[in-house]
Length: 501
Image 1 (tube, rainbow, N blue to C red):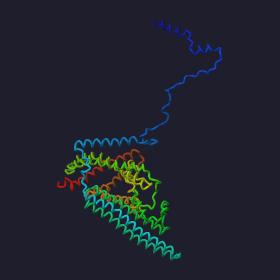
Image 2: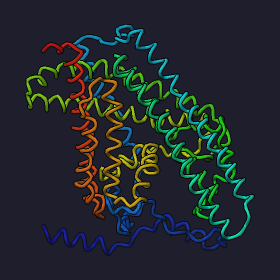
Image 3: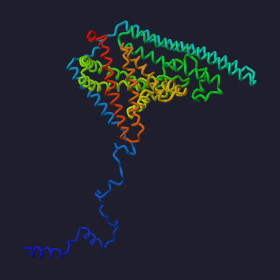
Image 4: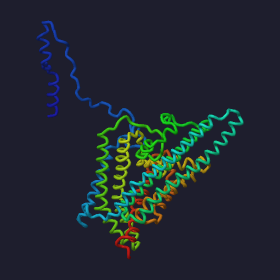
């Protein structure tokens, strides 16, 4: 059987092949001249042997990736997760405690509104007083400069004239500085006293105290900056040179009411005679930022009323008994809503409101914050998340201290102490609880700075990621929820339902 198959196969291989259609056509047309081009080999539509992996590549999320990818999709995902998770908590909370949103169910008295409005709109009066003080100082500087230019040019006369002018300037500066100090102190002291003793509602008191503090910082910057400009006018040979930006408005031409009013409304805390300006106001941009501000403010209010407030009330029993396990559970539960409100508040204030104000004022320098969410140290955070305050602290507190021989570390500590006092005023005064928690929280940042500084100095990507995780853990997971619970507990013990317990 096998041999028969082999024979058949061998016979099949010896048979002549049947001519193909192509060869048959060629034989038929061989006698006539061909007018067509020679046939081409069939082209391959798919090359299964093509090289896909040609060069070395890294994953986009690797630290050594040559191009950092955009995280736009992750940002959307995180925003959606925050919204969905907090919305679920609010729905669960509304099923347990009912719908708590009520526009008329507030505790703001008419007295608080009236006194708060009076204080809020009277604070700019201190800016007018600061303008009058500087106007007098400018007149004195111009008269001193005129006397200096009319003196003889002898060496003895010049030396004695400079000594006399220096002495006059020092005396005048002390008088002007004392007048500015009294004006600024009265601004902050009157508002603080009225808020602490006569305004009960924390929201009204916080708005008044914040406005008074901002005005106080602006008055201080206005006084310090004009003092140096006045010194540069009288002693140009001793001055290192003013910025070229100031050339369009030299001292004392900047001492005008319009110039001060612009500084009053400009989204900055440091005074300059001239600021970079934009060419026009974009109405569409203003409408967008205003819509964001209103929408986020409503969202924050809804979340606080519907979810945060019941959660804080339910924490009172555990705080009173010092049940640490239950307190920790409440802190973790509050951290999600606290982080959500804080991120919304940051965007509403530093992006929507300050950009809205800058657009209306045509204020061009709009770096109100940098990428603080990527920081690896607490130090980097405090220099990037609130640029207006950081600029004031660096220009008027830290740099002058270092310039007078104070070590940089001591200057940083003194700056944090000053910032801690301001935080205690802004939180302790409106809540009528000067317990030092806000001040301690600021001073407590110093050890965290020392702990996280090595992570920021390291060139290792893993170290920087670890430092960033420590920042989020220290600041947002435990810091803010604990502070909220401490002040809420203190408020309820003094004025709320736990007053007599």
